[in-house]
Amino acid sequence: MKRAIIITGIAAALVLAAAALFTDWDDVILSWAAPGLAAPSARSDAEKRVLAVLNEMRANGGTYLSVSEEKGRVLRLLTEAAGAKHVVEIGTSTGYSGLWFCLALQATGGHLTTFEIDRGRAAQARINFKTAGVDKLATVVEGDAHQKLAEVAEPIDVAFIDADKEGYPDYLKQLLPRVGPGGLIIADNLNMSSEYRSAVMNNPALETVVWGRDLGVTLKKR
Ligand SMILES: C[S@@+](CC[C@H](N)C(=O)[O-])C[C@H]1O[C@@H](n2cnc3c(N)ncnc32)[C@H](O)[C@@H]1O
Image (cartoon, rainbow, N blue to C red; front, top):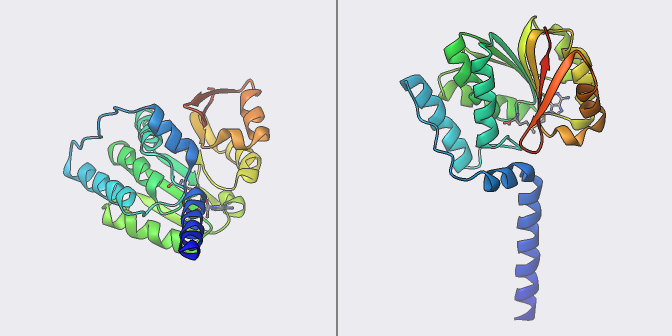
């Protein structure tokens, strides 16, 4: 009996540890703190198809360290409002945030270039983009974004940084000259890189606000 309790306890601890590892807790707290958001509703069949894949990914564990639905909606909103033609994302994972960008790009006629170092996640993202009917809107570039960013077409209208936190200052350095005047650089988990945070907060050529707890939204002034 005692042994069974110990084994159950260890199993529960392992499950909790795994859940903690694959969860962005900031986003969980944020979604608890902002209840009552009406579910996104589709205006077209194309939009409906993307939203269906997004829901399916959330419901069936198809995400990996992805942004919350609320952040995804903010990314879509900013991108569509900016009329962005070219979005660059660093850290595709399985394509969850990328699909939110694609909702905007369906309307703006733009394109997403998204970088992922993990082959399996890059492959899954391509499948998700195809299932959602937006594979023509998104190019998944497999490899280390620190090296591959130099090949990206300019200008960038919206850049989203959501990968290795120690790499944020280098991403900013590489992105800044490529983002056009009036463009946006958005960084998730802004507080996890004090060097990045300080760089975007203290540069007079930039205007930065933080949405929620840790989504940094930076405007490159005109
Ligand atoms: C937080 S997840 C991205 C979540 C995704 N933006 C979403 O919301 O669905 C970070 C991803 O960045 C990838 N990554 C880490 N370092 C990278 C690098 N140097 N180049 C490209 N991708 C990288 C990881 O493999 C991981 O899949």
